[in-house]
Length: 236
Image 1 (cartoon, rainbow, N blue to C red):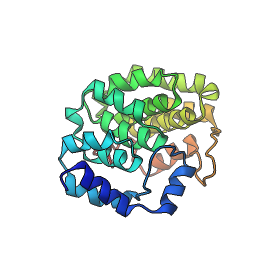
Image 2: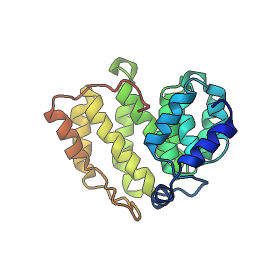
Image 3: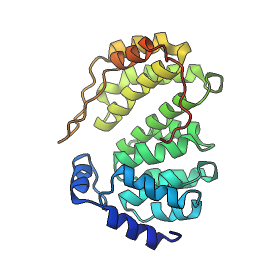
Image 4: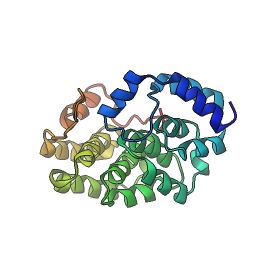
């Protein structure tokens, strides 16, 4: 497969109505064939390294193609302008937080865009910003992080989470979890923040998804003696 047309045909063939309905329940309100992630990974292997094709796929506005683009694109080649365009076009949380955010985190612009997006009045963009920064915490060595800045963001979560939009609350809660799990020097402050957050209420719609309790998530990683163990990459 070398063209957008060929890939779109493969995606359509791999789509399933049940999966499409599942994505719809989770908030997908854009064009979608309903391709499972496992199938997307198989297609991604066939077009791996084709950066220009990935850019074209994202521009189709089809959710499956956009997610696939996030798997295939070369983050170091992404410009700020392109990433800004991507987050504005994301359409729903799965694309913003699981396609755009990982690509942004692996690009040279992750921190600056995360800080910018966090301030957005658009919930999807703000949530993507918090997720991008959380992925930086999960992947970058601590000496490449501004710990004072991270602490300020934790304080922001504690102060603003109750009045933040629905999806942003989930991302904020996850940010505190990532601080506690991946940034050992800030474990104590993350645990204190998690305790203050308590159970974060997020409307997950017609799904069985639950919001993780930050105190429990951090405690689990701590009990495994894995606090500070970084991920190899932002993208799965």
